[in-house]
Length: 584
Ligand SMILES: Nc1nc2c(ncn2[C@@H]2O[C@H](COP(=O)(O)OP(=O)(O)OP(=O)(O)O)[C@@H](O)[C@H]2O)c(=O)[nH]1
Ligand SMILES: [Mg+2]
Image (tube, helix red, strand yellow):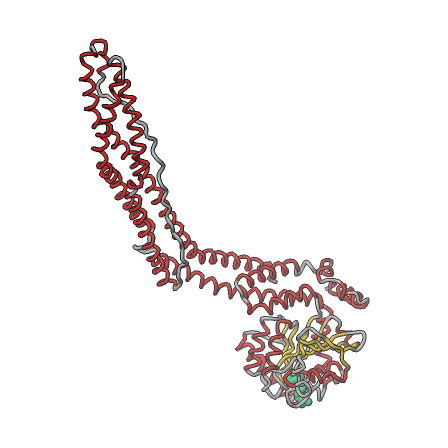
């Protein structure tokens, strides 16, 4: 208890020199009771909640979050709010506490705007409007802004009226708040009071003795439970009841609260008509003085409570989000199977594209060969004529003759093949073109099935894509031919007299021409076959890449929900740990 006394003394001195407003809560608490309720834990938790709200658009928590953040950063006075049904006597109670008729009262619904009363060196009334403007008005003008009669439907757009009174010095650090009544014909009054609830520090719930505890009051208590640990019941108009009736009503309060809400709340009686001084003293000493004496500790306790409560709400929303996300994950496996069905899957496509390649590649050689057939006879004739023409000029023994023949064949064939290749190679590309057309058709069909499947399962259309398969024209083969004979007569050249046998050898050389032509045409076909088939493979690989990329995009989209599930799980754990730190 010693520290409480010391603390109270320190606080009185602190408030007296009027400097406490200039210090931030943190600065003040660092040297005081920060050990009990560490501000950093509250801040930390609020930041995580704020992140979660942003990420999962929990807009319904915005007001609560903003209120808690403002408390943390601004360290305002504790709002001790009088709440309750219309005509419960809220404004009358506050006037009675103040000892002067500051707030308008009446027999019909009156209070239309939130009105805060706090200590100030001089009497000052500030009217704050929704647009952020504020005006200072005189004492006599208060009703102009806070009463339904003078400001019907709050047409003057009053957000809050702040009243500063020197007489409230004993309650510096608190703010007494009058609120519009609930349940009247003026729905606006109710929504004004309800939307202000996140700000509440301590709630005095006024219940009129002639309407003891309605369902609306219970509802309000339930709601207040989310915003403050300090709820007190105020049985107003106690003068309307006899002593026995008062006891009976209090008993009824306690039983109802126990039954309906499973909790106890302190109950205070009040009357502005009789024994007011007695009632007032009790309220002052037991509620207001205690709050003032422990103002900063109470403030932190309230802030911690609000933060915990906000965290619980946030966790409830996240649990809903988690369940939804888990459901989607479960469905996702199903969706995956529906989208990537037997018509749309990678291995099927690989097989199909492979078949197209193989089929066409098998045809490449016969196609070129058949095409080249037409050149065989003319080429034989042409080469024979040329050989006949060139050969007589060759000189030397059989060895030299043979070398000359070999060179001649190599040069001429190379030249002929090169010309043929150059002039006719476009006619070798039949299978390349056919394969290209088949790949394109196959890809289009795949895309169409995938699109249909996605539309059916997810109800969205795939964006158009340009899946263009490039036809890479093969390079020209390097055409060089060698070797003329299978058997080398020239090994025995020194035994053969050329003047006798030359003609025989010339005839032999000429007879060899058709075979040379045949071999060289076949080689040309082979060389082009290799290149064309490699180009078909390149196209096939390109088509597979298109398919793979598309399928992994779809799978990526579907797996997004899995990412979300783990993100929500992480957040829940983080909030739970931080909440644990803040527990009393
Ligand atoms: N008998 C009796 N009547 C009271 C008492 N306090 C207030 N009243 C009367 O109750 C009526 C309503 O008083 P208000 O203070 O205006 O009630 P309120 O809760 O502020 O009403 P709203 O602002 O409209 O929500 C007035 O006619 C008061 O005279 C009391 O202690 N005893
Ligand atoms: Mg009122």
